[in-house]
Image (cartoon, rainbow, N blue to C red; front, side, top):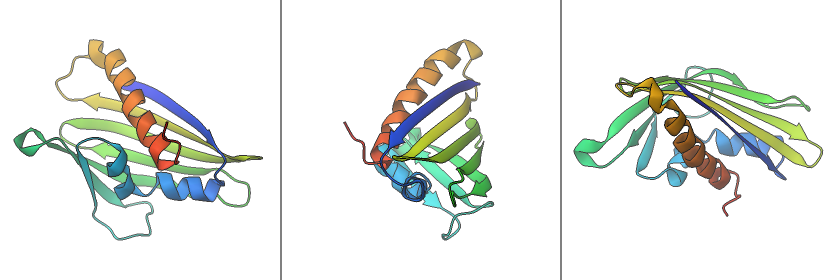
Length: 146
């Protein structure tokens, strides 16, 4: 499995960073060729399932995910969200942590990503690509487009 970590510091308060990075449908605006459908109406919590459909026409695939842990930030405490990827093509898990800081918040996104039929020797390239794509998405979600 490819593993990568992305960190961003922002002036946004932890509650606002959390709201932005856990607005699943909003992720689609920052990931090319992707649409996201949430199968359970907000508010999000453990048990929420959403599907990222990536690609064009017959070359598209679904990446279903389930929120398995949901602890929003509160009273100076970090927020933590764990996701399980449950697709037939893409498997793995993600962890999103939003920590309050004196000047805003610190967001840490860790992803473990496996793609069926992709050999393990491709993991470093997959991690680099994931870091780039998800890093840009995180920048967009936090309003840090460069």
